[in-house]
Amino acid sequence: MDIMDIIVGIMTDYGLVMSFAVVGVVMWVSYGLSKLTKGRIHGSAIAIVLGLVLAFIGGIATGGSKGLSDVALFSGLGVMGGSMLRDFAIISTAFGARLEEIKKSGLPGILSLLIGVVLAFILGVVLAFAFGYTDVASMTTIGAGAVTFIVGPVTGAAVGATSDVVAISIAIGVIKSIVVMIITPVLAKPLRLNNPKAAMIYGGLMGTTSGTAAGLAATDARLVPYGAMTATFYTGLGCLLCPSVLYLAMTTLL
Image (cartoon, rainbow, N blue to C red; front, top):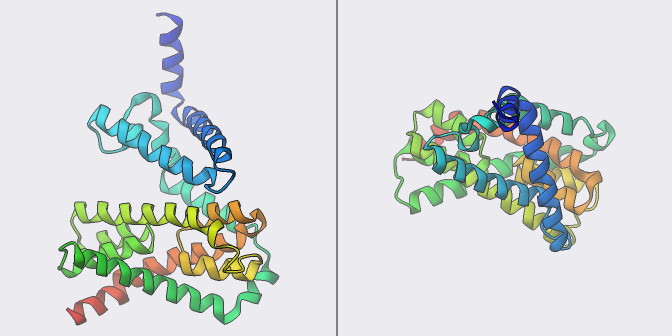
């Protein structure tokens, strides 16, 4: 056994440690590319795109369904990208918010959550119908995906949507996340996105915690905890409303 076999063996046995190294390299490259855009496109947005490209390459190379984590050397990415660490990251980000500022959002903050979820859902349903999905389960699932890429599969599992529809809902949510990352710094000035209250309302309207957090980081890092806080509530509200109230509303209308 030569030195390369030993190194590969160690990397395979300690997959989670290897995954941190891989993500670190991707983030380093992404933030380097971000500098070429003078910060207009945040490093996190570039990192997500690179991650999707690597997942596609991994899927093509192995014929699997879990992207790069189907490669034994990168199996730890499946754990690192799982729901446990994802939820930990979201919650830990929200812990940076100050309660005094959260109280200032008041009724506008609550309304932003409801408006954001319902409006995104309606837009998703319209897109689903436009592309030929006319059954209630599919339209509801794709509409939920437009809320966030987390709400989509949760709703799809609850209402019995097919796997291809669930995949579409995730894709819509990911695209939304990337778009929010890119447009947030552009819209920050005209929307006066320069204080915690505005960031919380924005997070409530946009949702997509990853997109909102990255977009606000490119705008003003101090606003990230506030936008992430309401974006997290947005995801929870979407998981409650989409497979229940909004699904029943769709059933009644159609």
